[in-house]
Image (cartoon, rainbow, N blue to C red; front, side):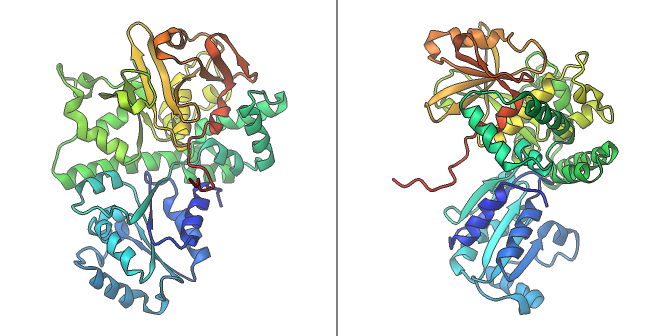
Length: 452
């Protein structure tokens, strides 16, 4: 079984006695159902799983239920001998967005306390938008992502004690020894190929067969496209979700690394406002990561958000390298100079930062240039610019240098992630770090409660 950090969050919530219902969100195939099932079966003598997508594709037993009491009756007709009470029975509502009325009913299921409940969903951002009565105050929402690099290391038998030492070195701005660096970089390059989709990681661990790994990724890619087509069909609209999603790898090669509106339909005068629903789908479904533009790099960054200027990345770096390189793994494993891996490195850093609780921003100014990422540093209450370099010239970053030279911004430090082993500090407070150190740039909530 793959180690997932979210497992502890789920177990703690279900064991806490909280009457709120945990709602685990995330893209399809990131492992939500598996980890909830594993924890639920361990903690509750009676574990009942209802997958509403499968129900809708089959007998549709739960589809047209009109009340909570009717729902309880159906449960009893199917699982009567396994229904105890709130202390020993957990009911898992999987893919809850398929039947939106159940999202509304979470409030009443919580108030009844007849059984314990947990739910998951893959398009909850879209479903909650269309739900007439939101269960405010009745649910705890938690986002789940593909395996991050730290989880990938653990899946490859990387010891927790080594990770603890590495994290301490990151905090103290120190380098790891050369042998360890080489080991981690080898696994990092493999992570670029495999990514973090659980089925792909399991295929890698079990077979190391790139064909099998790529087949898993191709199947997920087709599923995402099919989901987009179904969404358009259900809503009776002709949208360009598939077109935009398939443009993501190529748009990373643009100078601005953004989609160009007129290229979506090859239509002059096109504006991003015309594709707002497509962008909302890509982000809400979790199959793309968004990086928002800001007009003024001041903390907190959300206060200077610029609408309609968003960069999109695929949600999994393995899915990206599948589309870029297919079965030719040499460019990534051998770090070939003839191949530009800049978009791949940016994608994996975006994936890592978001998985570690950061909302992603970027800054683009005609005089300064474009800084890859800017995140909120809550420890210092200031913005932290982050640049990503895949080549040997990692000390060349004119935009970041100009950015830090603007006194009005009041920002005196930044990070450059690259393949280099040595951690060093250059001019303008720029700290050069190995790219794998991004796994320690955490903004998630603390493990222990903060009492005030």
